[in-house]
Image (cartoon, rainbow, N blue to C red; front, side):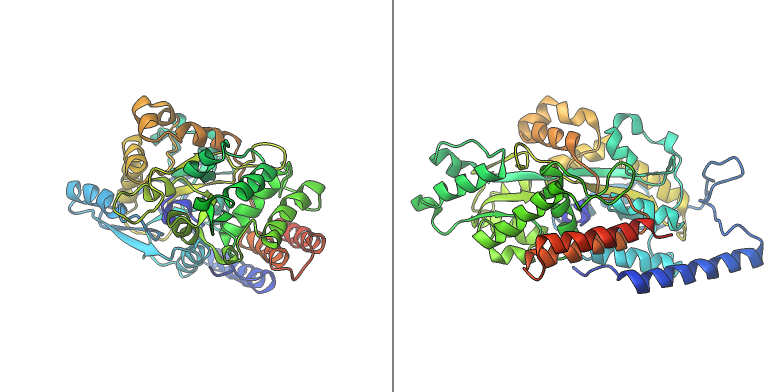
Length: 451
């Protein structure tokens, strides 16, 4: 969900329930028969050994990093530092589309064909369970990484049944970007509730400076961002999409209040009509051009919106706050990116060393300074110099502390498709909120129980 556009990892809808399910079952059956006939556990140098730990690979050489599109243009510079020190083990950047759904599709296609085109995968954390369960990524040696220095909830995103399959590259939580200059004009603090936000919008729009400005936008196109924004609305109303026992829980009053807020927002103009097609970059451009008073966005927007090169009309005029909720501060979805090694890759020893370099604290600090990406390392949030440069760090730390993961489901493609389909139907008015949530409950439950 999702902080460079490649960093938050979040548009083309994932495959539908029936066809995708049948293809997976057929593929699994064929794989089982092949394994049995060869009497070879279908493992490779990254599979678990007889003692239960990951095997080591000594293969070294050039590798690739497959990741979502780097809209900041800073990623290659980090790779250049590695490549200068490792001329015979260079990393080539493979940029996938901006859309998280399209990224996931390409990752899965690569795995299903057992291609070695992608070595290191920069995954949305919510995909880790799916990729580990399907044996598309290798278990990693957890003890070789400083996981104890990272935010525990972020580390857990790379864990599958007690084994570490991915290492956090960064993390993410949604923030409310707001025009501080305009709120100062009406003598208002950033809103803590949805009602306060609407009231502030009405007052600002009465100002000469606020003429023509829209109130609020998030990511509402029918893609992973809609799953994120819907989940946040439900959590910010006191509900959950999936409970601690793994049961779908969108047939509740809290879920209804969360979705109703979004539906009403489009009806009454709080959310502009064009936001129905917004992904992260669409909203960022709208905010930077001065068209939005409030914008739900990942931290990466901070650096871009503060650019002094003329690309942003709001540089120095905005600040950030926690997301608002029904009766108080809301709750963000947990985003970020995790690094994993493809089961089918070559030169895995190099890949492992590269992940250690790419995920270390120094690189996380550099990422924060250059792109305002949220680091996974706890201490960086309390660093005085960084807090001075990025005054939103305390707010981001608070947001991360209460952030909730999207449904951790092995068949995540089916789960997010169920959420997107019903939420989009409610937002565009083709279904009532009650009917949309009833359908979502049924389809989400089916995705969770799918074997």
